Structures are given as structure tokens and as C-alpha cells.
Image (cartoon, rainbow, N blue to C red; front, side, top):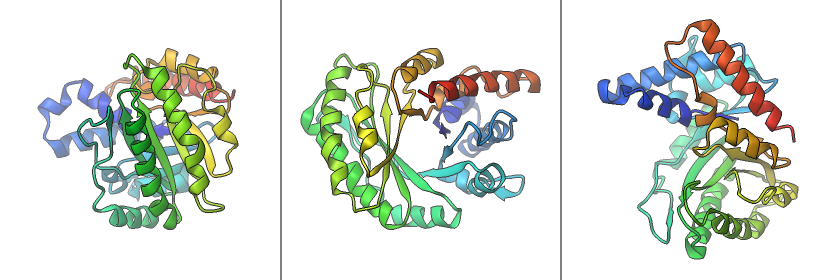
Length: 274
């Protein structure tokens, strides 16, 4: 999986967000995104899916809507990020803001041959109540998304910098063990989880019939560390954004850009094979 959050962060890291108007920044992000997608390194042989913002869905690549281009030209499965950001911290977590236009987003997804959606919450501490609330909210919204025939990616991200990360991950695992049982028969979700401190913590969940895949986010780890951690976690594949874009520059010469992206994708692909 390739998520575009990292491309947005890459543009901001160059200070462009302070120089350009908001729409200009979106255009720059799309330019960078298009360069990655049209690279020879970006292919369905190593990349299963790409997570896109709604702004991206409404833009085009070679005069073709972005999501449709991914599927019809590259056989890469498109997903749409549907959340509207996070609420303030309560019980050491940040729940999703209300998604008032969820139905409109799901209709847009269907119109653009999108396979599924993604929602991101954040866990900032080992708080049992907060973590249960995050899991319940994510799965409740996922039920509505499933009713549209789309596959939701549920992302309760555990922040990598918190001192009780392992304890928070243990609580998250406990909450995730039983919640998929309430999904209707033959319906499936994807879990997108931070790379855990305890190797293979989430591996038992890969056997659940209502979990299609478990994918790992890089979550702020540098590429090499994210790849090393992924190798140690069996049956989990990468859904890296920041790690994928690491080292890429918008104005890199083509040969340098292609070489860097090829090396990055290959290393992430190999780590996903364990």
C-alpha cells in the first residue's frame, strides 16, 4: 500500500506550505504524487493499493480521474481517506471528528471505482477507556461503509513516541480481538496498525475471517527502522507513506528520482514478504 500523507508532509517539509496558497499547495502535492505514480518503480507487481485524499479523487492524471487511472492503467486498488481529522485529546486518545458528509464521500468513491476507505485515529497513552472508545467508533463507522459495498481500512494509530507504547498496544490488541466478530458474515475490514514493540503481537488477528488484511504504517519511523520492524512481523504488509517518500525531492533529476524510489519500494516490498 502507498498512502499519500507522506507526500503532503514532504511538500510541507520543504516550507512550501508557507509560500504557496492552499490550492497551490494541493497542486504541488498532486504534481509530486503523479510523478511517483507514473514512475517505472510504481507497479501492481509490488504495490497492491493507494490511499488517496478526496482532493486527489477530484484531480486527473493524463486526463483520467486519479482513482480510475490507478485501477485501469496500473491495476493498483484505490482507497479514499474519508475522515475529517481528529478531536482534542480525551482519555489519552483522539477520536475522529464527526464525518457529516460520509454518504457523499462514499458515493464519490463508488463513482470513481474506489475499493475502500480509510479513517485514522490516534492513541497517545495506555488508557483502556480511550482505546475501547477508538475501536468502537472506528468499527461503528466501518459498518456504514461496509453497507455501501466498500472495504474500510481501520487505523487506530499508536503514537511511536509515547513512553507506554507497548502497554497501549496490548490494550489495543485486547480491544481488537473480539470487535470483528460483530461484522456481518462475509464482510471484511482491513486493519492499519503501528508497528508494535512486541513482534507478531497482531499476527493472530490475521486469521480472523472478517479481517481481510493487516497493514502497517511507518508512523514516523525512519525507513530503515520501519523496514526492520516490518520484517520481524509475519503476515503483515506495509502501508507506508512518510517512509515511502523519504529521500525524494520534487526537483530531483529523473534518474536520481527513479533510482531512489526503486530502492525504497523494493526494500518495503521485500519486508512485506515475511
